[in-house]
Image (cartoon, rainbow, N blue to C red; front, side, top):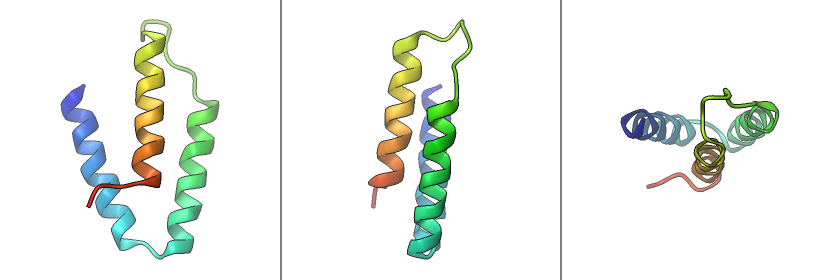
Length: 65
């Protein structure tokens, strides 16, 4: 799973860098809305789901350079 999260970080960071600020904001709000309504599978530990949720939100708001 770590490799998948790292790949997601690379893709999201590259995508955000190429977007205009207004498009970035629209994407961020859309993804955050989807995350807020998403429910993890019952086999996924709650703390893992919450950690991924917080990581994606942080990545969207503060992408790495």
